[in-house]
Image 1: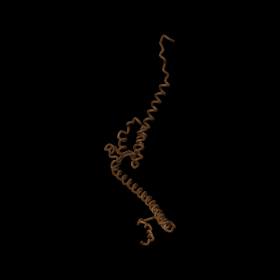
Image 2 (image 1 turned 135 degrees about the vertical axis):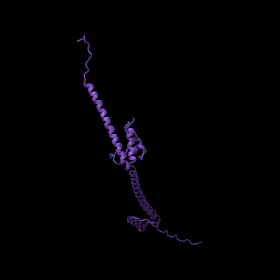
Image 3 (image 1 turned 90 degrees about the horizontal axis):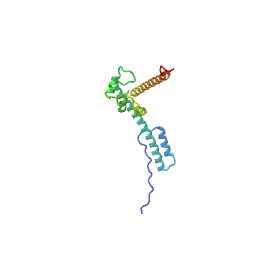
Image 4 (image 1 turned 30 degrees about the horizontal axis):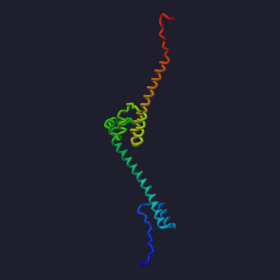
Length: 184
């Protein structure tokens, strides 16, 4: 029978060739010095590296997202810049609205007939708010929608005041009773 040999020592986990921050390197070296078994040491190192890589990935995704937003805004500005010359701030150029050149379909639909009152005001307000939240890069459209909403609110207030004035006028007028000329 062959003699049993002692199991070969498992080599320590080599740190990949990525640039690790100093605190992560120190923690990895401390793990090697601790009196952990080889398996525990490997587990701890993997957990530490996994944690580090997750944060790196999140940071890179955030950076890419901001770059993408900047690129989208610059493209939007290229499309909008020729039509914005001589326009009042906060109002998109009418030819772009008519041509449907603005980027978001839902916002285009709500801009199509801005003065038309919808049957369900609450539903429209929610839809407009949701569209603006989903597309924060369209500040120009957001300002236009807010301005339009303010104008509609002012119109409603004027109509309400007119109704109240008419009602007060009717109430204040005392209608003479029709009296028969022969009766006293």
